Image (cartoon, rainbow, N blue to C red):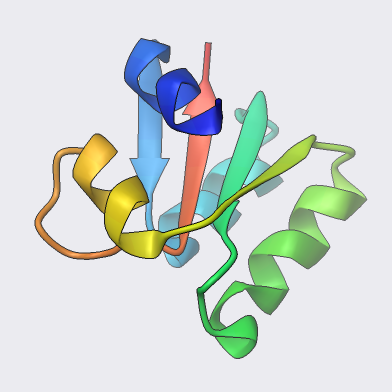
Length: 82
């Protein structure tokens, strides 16, 4: 499951702005997006990931994704570096 990939990653980048920056620098192995995230919020991240040919995985919950990342709020997007 994708949540496990977050906990096993060498490094994670949480949040849309930081994730877009990392994607543009070609530093991301996979992108994880929460299905319940606002489409407007994740639109740019998905666009850049597609441009960079970065695999995108979708998980069910922002809340769970945030918890796995060690933050107390939901996470819409997480960049994973192995």
